Amino acid sequence: MNTPSKKICVALLALAAATGALADGNFKCDVPKAERKKQTELKAKLLADGWKKVRQVKVENGCYEVYGFNEKNERAEVFFNPKTFEKVGEVK
Image (cartoon, rainbow, N blue to C red; front, side, top):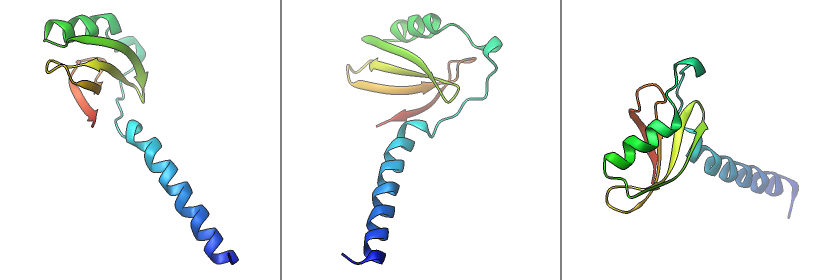
């Protein structure tokens, strides 16, 4: 393989890897820590709203990222504003 083709291959592989990493990180919440509600409150709200199970809640790009099973009992990865609990995005 000649050098220009090799460089193009490496660049395409790097781009593909970066695109996968951005799939989870394209949601951003700018909420100061002092204004965030507790993660346990979000979990309780989701269960009261019909979610079947909440496996994990963590902070990603300032948002609460929730892994679990939604009201349709489908696997879900959803991002919420930590101050308002408004849904800001979902990974399909």
